[in-house]
Length: 260
Image 1 (cartoon, rainbow, N blue to C red):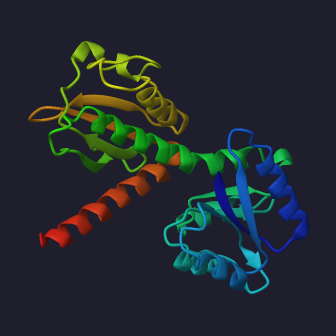
Image 2: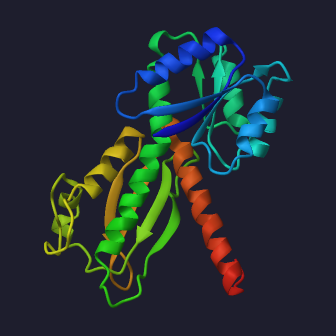
């Protein structure tokens, strides 16, 4: 269930957007509507109430790009997707530069692209969780898990895919099985470990749907490194995952008294 805060004052546009979300048969959406910025801020003050914000920039109490800034102050890191009118695609690109995660054009019949926008973040989170679950699965029950989650950035240009890497200390995967483990219902090692063999296949599918890829390599000192990247219009998902990893690592270091 995706929980969406729709900030839109036009009743006709609200109806069209809600109908478009209802067409997504893969995932149910629970939509809360705010007709102005003040009402939206009250909703956003509720802890962990939403997964996504859909935002119209021209509201009775806030207009233009400033609306993005004011919403993001209260959004606590939630992805903000801007709603623009027909012919305002350039305006939508400017919104991305301002910190929005995506934009959609109102008035396109069926809003076919809107459900995909809602699903993207959920799929990305599921892929990361599958990688961590896979790492834990191959940890000896008597051992403390040695798992590291870190940002992944290629050494190429700014437009190259970005994502995360999950490192474990499991038995490792032989070179001839490193592609096979990403196939549905296939297991590379330790067939006695519980599971269906679908987790890594889902990771690869999510990566490819978002312009990226997934692969495994040996970890220095033993174990494996699983990488998932996001590219193109979905590159922001990888950037967000990387930022989350950096923040988590910094918090852990501060708790131990280490220097970041």
